[in-house]
Image 1 (cartoon, rainbow, N blue to C red):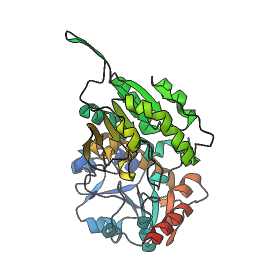
Image 2 (image 1 turned 30 degrees about the vertical axis):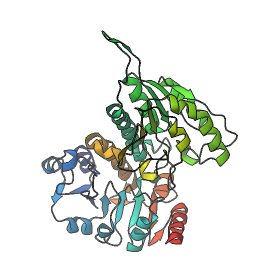
Image 3 (image 1 turned 45 degrees about the vertical axis):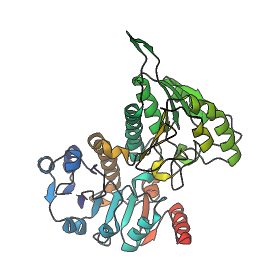
Image 4 (image 1 turned 120 degrees about the horizontal axis):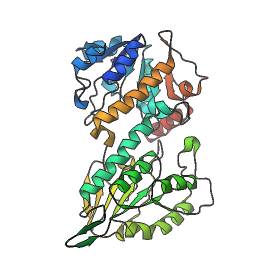
Length: 381
């Protein structure tokens, strides 16, 4: 079985699917690894390191894609890349299958078996394969650094000859993996941190990191399958915004992390809430690519409105390519080792991990949620 590592061509994507250490592990396990020339350069892993680890370097991209039995990527393939895959091959990558189901449809029509790293189930057994969580942790960490660089004041309390400077107040909205990492990082920098999440079960996790939990009592289920936050009713959104309005107004920094797979990000900071924020405060919106949690977020832009800076970062994990690649590489290597048996893919769809992650096989889209998302897109067209 030929396992190939592709060079990413997406603008701003600096990660690589496998780093040399993971290549060495897979080669030791008896797998044959081919790496496209320059695939790791943007994350500071060079061809000679891959060769030393036992990989074969392939300069011709079309040859690599065309001969691969299993292709490994970070970003979803573009249309022109899909055409380079041969029928009967397989791909493992982030595919955004619920947000961009057309990619999955193209792969299915090409006869490619597609595994989406977003669809790894959130179970103990699959924890070491959970790439969404590993990359979200990086995003949460980097969001706080962006906030600290943007804010016109210190994060920690300082006692100086000029007097005592009070610590910054940071509000983290959403206490998933990204949110919890943001809380921990902001606390390390000395800020006073509050956090909100519609899921009451995360209260203890928030408090264990030294933050105050902002609680809103809601009369409905707030936890979806896999532990994600569920989209709540308009009445619950209204109540939540009423409770949070004062907290947002008092904050120096707000970091928002709420996202719903395949849907527009929930609005957490409305125009009315934003109008109450202090000049000099800042928002870092990790849901910018999904439409933003803030009413005025623009993906990929830093804007200032009424004295408040709104940062809408895109693909934050790629801005820390060394550790992002290291973590993703561990996730994907663990997954393919789990899936490959006797030098062939074990397509046992009754297996929870394999069945959940495989979104296309045999010229068909396997996942019902992806099919529904595709119908919605088709309806819009």
